[in-house]
Length: 270
Image 1 (cartoon, rainbow, N blue to C red):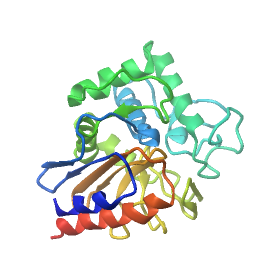
Image 2: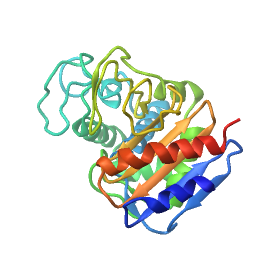
Image 3: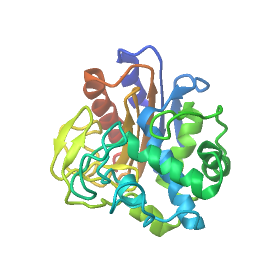
Image 4: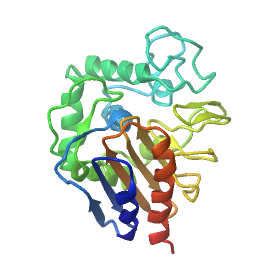
């Protein structure tokens, strides 16, 4: 793919990428065996596990967690009123989009309690194994500590694009803005009003500036991670993209990621 040429100019020591084209073919770039920490891209994997558990009846989107009025749905959509870090609420549910690692750690603990399984064991059995993802042993925070190589992340990316583990209704909810009137801050980018988010994935909407391409459709969904990682799916162009890198997210990413994503979209323009 010509778009991968952009990556060779990045100020990053190690980077790998995957693109899924409209035919469903996966194109890879970089070291296919190197394992990267996904950082907050982990949250989408966690969300998928929670949604699978909802379909199994192990948990429910309406399950109460934490402060009064907070549910699984609120925490998946960063609307539970919990801070980025720390267990004390900083607001009421469904008042503001407050991006929260704590909320996702609460979700993983809830799923572990309800299933009687270690959270990462549940992810392995409910998400990784059915998708053919062979991963190093996972541990740590469900919000930020998952680790995969680009080959196996591309298999999860394919699931985000054409879900096999979720029923259509669950998938549509996951990629549809929840509590869509809420404003909020996307870490590293700024405040947006509204700040659309689904049940796990961020929704691109009309946010500017943004880590996706300005040419990504408003209904594009995905997530980026502070370790230099991202995944996105654009259902209009039917293209999906993932990047793993070993440099923390800062100005370099905002300078290079949108340009690369634009090149990917242009390569498959209809």
